[in-house]
Length: 105
Length: 166
Image 1 (cartoon, rainbow over the protein chains, first blue to last red):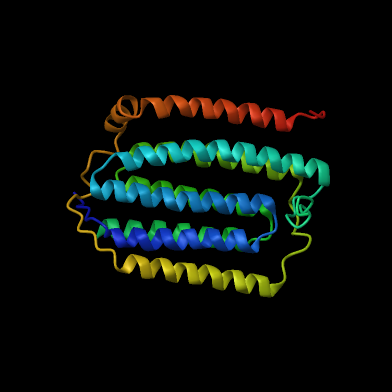
Image 2 (cartoon, rainbow over the protein chains, first blue to last red):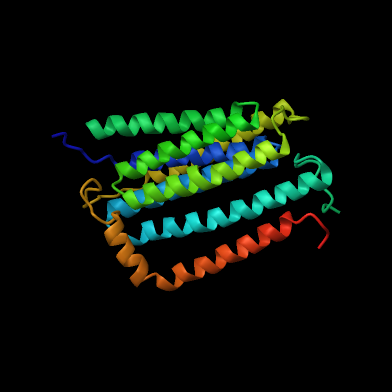
């Protein structure tokens, strides 16, 4: 029987912070709208994991219910976002975000 | 100690594939690396004894969202390099900004001191039975409202995907 010892919650804090910052860097350096959406998904997932970790460490199930609802909203967001990306590609033949500056002025 | 090794393995796998998602040139490789990251995060959920979330995460993210991304990448024929990559100084500044954000977060969390009285390896809150009871008892109205949200998203996606002008 392998005994599992608890991991300090600081490890989860550090891991999720690094994952979130990778997502932020991805949003900043990428020009492809699809990759920016994927980086946002990465950030959402790091937040989800941290919520679930705190929920497990404080023995409160409300955090995990909240993670479930975040997943629901993220699924809806991805469906709409990808539909918009396909629509943009159909009209401008590019999903480079620097092309999409028609609303700027 | 065994759970620590699993934690390190899953964390390194998630971080490695997240970085590879950013540095790989082809969008389809990025999608596949992101899927790998999601599987590592599902392993983290299992490690936290949140089995319901682990299963839902695999179904929703690795099953639905990543397939949607893969379809879009293949449909748009994006399997080439970015046409006009950002200049290198923008990337350097973005990387530095991300590192600054990480330093800020670490500085904030250093003062945080939790004395967890509960062992996450033995709590039963993440199981389907207990979470389902709470979801259908205390959070019934948000649960039903999320179906309205899905209906709205579905109608919106169909409307946006229509060929002719609206």
